[in-house]
Image (cartoon, rainbow, N blue to C red; front, side, top):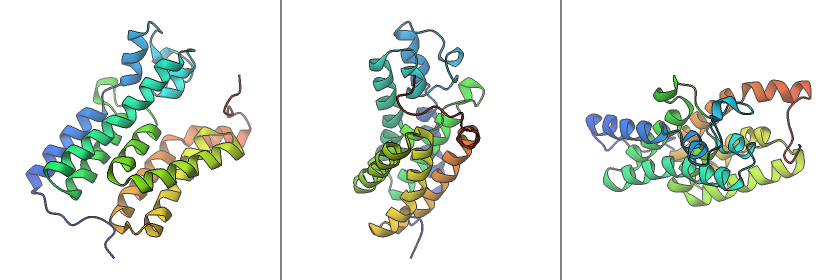
Length: 204
């Protein structure tokens, strides 16, 4: 059982798709939307994060929704383009690079978002059944514990098990890498959960 797709794309091709994925992923849509909507500098608001959750803290539900869709879409588009013109190996690599670009954008001194929306956009694009069950896992955990960050960590980790259950072994290594990165990006949230200071969903 292979934990990753067969390498069918040339090295030059993989580098090109990874570069495209990173550039797409590094577009800070949260900052762009915040400026277009006159919400101010997102990095000076709330947690300072550039994702949809922080846009929501400005009070703009439309801005948060658009940020969510765009952050998810950039990884999905990168993966689908590479998948269509190259192969599964290029698709996974381009999507992973987009995720890394979102978390560590060169334009913002490598200080980006936490990658949850980008994670879901990627796995939906590569295997929508995996996206559905992983999304359902997020909803279930978030509904019970009311912590968005905890739901993200659990659901990303659960995606590895879902790969096995759905017969998608070639995506296990990708999901493992994404889960590790999401946990790393949520290190501060984990500490706040331990200390009892993490904000719950819907909490003012």
